[in-house]
Each structure stands twice: as C-alpha cells, then as structure tokens.
Image (cartoon, rainbow, N blue to C red; front, side, top):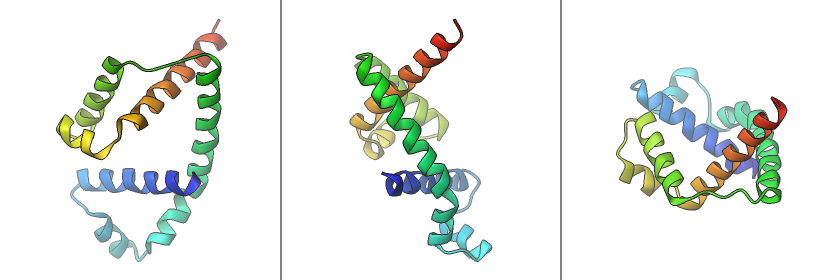
Length: 118
C-alpha cells in the first residue's frame, strides 16, 4: 500500500511539473536525482497518508458511508477542472472504484470534523 501511495505521490508531482511545462525526466536530469531518490522523499508522506486512509475507511465502513453516482461524476469533473483535462481523459486514468473510495473517505473525514466541532 505504501509503495502504491508513493507512486501516486510521484505521479501527482509529475502532473504538477507538467502544468509548469516540465516533464518528470527533465526534473530528474536538472536536479541530478534518480527516481529512487524522489520516491524516498515521498515515502514518509505516503506512509502517513496510508495510515490516515485506513482510519477513514474503517470509519466509513462503521458508519455505512457510501458514494452515489452523482458524487462520483462530480469528483471526475473536479479532477478534470483541476488538471485542465477532459472528463473522459480522467475517467480513462482513474478507476471508478478508486473515486468511490475517495468520496467515502472524504465523507468520513467530514463526519469527524462535524462531530469534533459540536
């Protein structure tokens, strides 16, 4: 799970670089880093994100939190807008099941926030 999350962080970073007109390969060459170095930089964050995600998934399950089709479509649209992409491109890159889990985790997080502020 941590390796997958580390790869996800690297991919997100690559997308940010791309928005600024650089490729990941160009960045690595300019900084003299190897892919392993970059992944090592993201590993702690990845570990923390996995732990946090597991807690949110447990809360979502315990509270029977689910995601509907409208919420999933909105999530696809939000991602497309964030990265200046077409919705269909995002759908080809991100599986629906992944977004379902993301929406459920966000709802669990919102539940925690709402409960803590009462």
